[in-house]
Image 1 (cartoon, protein in one colour):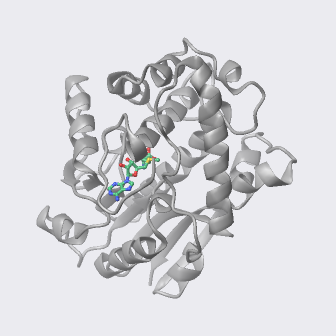
Image 2: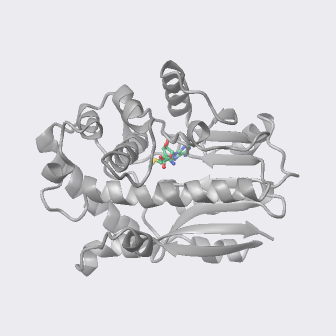
Length: 307
Ligand SMILES: C[S@@+](CC[C@H](N)C(=O)[O-])C[C@H]1O[C@@H](n2cnc3c(N)ncnc32)[C@H](O)[C@@H]1O
């Protein structure tokens, strides 16, 4: 399904379905005797969305190993990736809170339940930004599940290609106070120039001492098109198990700026944590096959501080 300039979605379609897919990864990573993360909301949220294939995986009815059929890129890899990614971004927000930052902005919040899950210090305000149908669904579903936010949670339903800084300020965001930002699982869904505009907007709203966590693909255009190929093969394989969502052509290939270089050139001090190293620390090794492994080996999670 090709992207268009003002396309919209819910959690069962297009870019929205990827938010459900990564929540399946969090549900899987939260299972078992010694889980790497604990996201108690991932499975019930996936179940509520109602994509049958995702529900059966998240609930344990369908074995991810059976679905993957020994492929390198699949649900088991998604589980491992989401485990290290969730820990990275959780640790980022906890460290920012520890340093005294009381405003957090979760861009492209999807089915992320950090506002309900992390021990935010008193006085913290957490803003969640995503498309309206995504925000409405998650907020209503978590309410029905009896979940209560662990901070003052303010939702901002707006497209991140539009004037979201205005909407964020309208919701009460204070650009004079330091803030902690995450853009997790978002950048490849933005055209290259929208990625730069997003980072510029974050910079413009970030007082000195603010922090940002996001991701970067070195050799971005190649990695994004390889990722798109892998996801197409993967979803084709899932069709045999009843998966019926169209999730191809959602990513913008083409040259884009390296996030670390861009941030360092725009008033931030940015560091990268290579995902392969984070996975290795959890005893997960990537396939030796250069082409397929490159999707992962080029990926790093980034943390930056505004000078
Ligand atoms: C892969 S999901 C990641 C969700 C969440 N950050 C997580 O890690 O669970 C991508 C998210 O980006 C959001 N997104 C992508 N492009 C967007 C846009 N232009 N405006 C608002 N949200 C967008 C989608 O709605 C979706 O929730």
